[in-house]
Amino acid sequence: VDMNDDGTATSKHRTEPKCGYSFFVKEEKHKIGSKCTLNMPKVHKKWKMFTPSQKEPYEKLFKEDRQSLGLNYRKGRTRKKTIPTQKKQKLVVVINDEQDVEVEPPSVDHAVVEDKQEVDEPPSLSNMLEEFKSLEEELRKKTSLKHEKLQDLLKLKVDTENKVKEISELDNLVASYQLKCKALRKNHDRCPMK
Image (tube, rainbow, N blue to C red; front, side):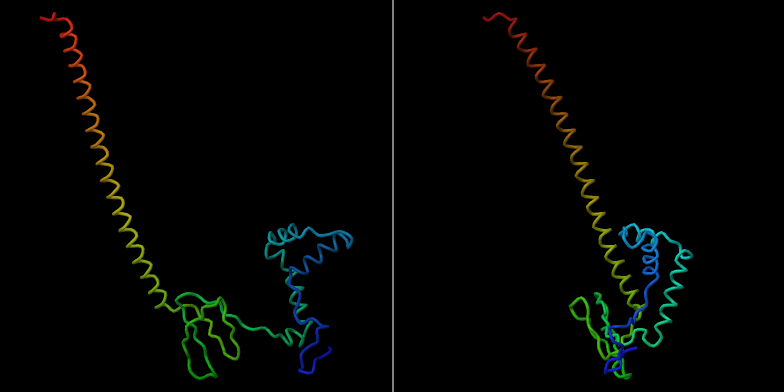
């Protein structure tokens, strides 16, 4: 194993094991031959359809590959931890094993944390209850608003039905006056003028 001055493995050697999926793809490629191209969406779909027992031999190969890396496993890895931020949530950071400090999450999507230990815990029960109460209050307000709108709609429906009745009565009244006018004209037309 070649090492850099700082004790990390050189890029000539792998430090990450191949996953079970990689071994599966390699096997599929071996089946069709090196001159053919794999249909990756089809291969991926086939992998997704496997049961855990069907994936087991590939996962076993992954574990063996990880063990074969020995001390090189993730040697010299230089990844920075990122914390996804969420609304209404505070981060608890332990600085030099002393005291927990609550900090507001930054406004960016991810905060980079270096030289600090991250406490990654689920939201507390009190925070969850507080959120539940606010959601319950919002639901109550929206339900109340829905009932008010429903009452308004019912009033409009009743008003509309009343107007339709009035119009119908007026139509009947107009029709009866028209009949009376016709009868009067007929009578008027029959009578000789003096």
